[in-house]
Length: 258
Image (cartoon, rainbow, N blue to C red; front, top):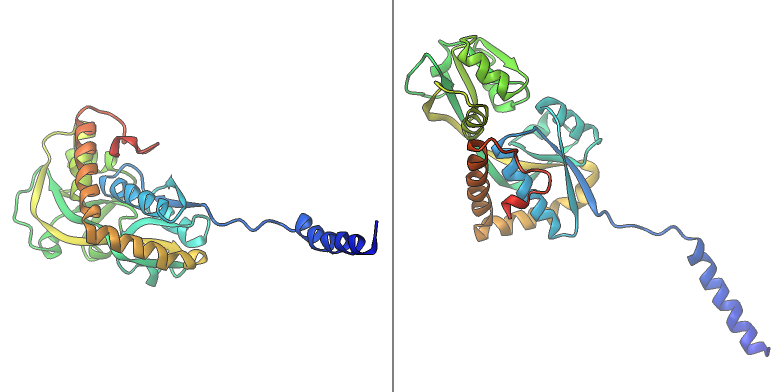
């Protein structure tokens, strides 16, 4: 072997050996997001976030946890973020970054078996004992001066309401109607108008801050094109029909929403 070839192979080895032992740098391909289980509004936003992240090459895995536990898990970094929450929670959960624009919304609605009155904001609920689901922040924040009872899930909420353990149940309107249909609960009146409407925002843990502008741009495009509204309409229709037929939510593969 002549000197030219020997020098070539030495240089080739000097370049190749570091590459052989270098650890490959892997792009982030999957996020774990948390959200409370079995509610219409969360499933809407689950479909939205899964579709949005897919457009930037990221798979989303949804982990269902009770409301307050979901927030603590996202804030601790044990999950990558929250599927959706109301505005302003980053002021309390300091490790979460609120992503704009809003991707969904809910209406806070009162339900009762014994009362029938025109709802005029939170003040109109003060004469009554209120029931709500622990971890639903818009209710917790607005009922601090109202006698109230918190429960762990919708089944308890509406069963306790029918047993007159409290006068009025407060929950997101669609969720209440869906759960009553699914559980076969009768004799509960939806009181209107809604107490309030709340925009819902996606939240990321600060460790994922580099993703914030990318996913924000996708959400903005989906809002502008009308896609967010289309997804909401489709999910509501599918879930309400499934509730009547006592079918599960369809959140394992989400194929029924395609």
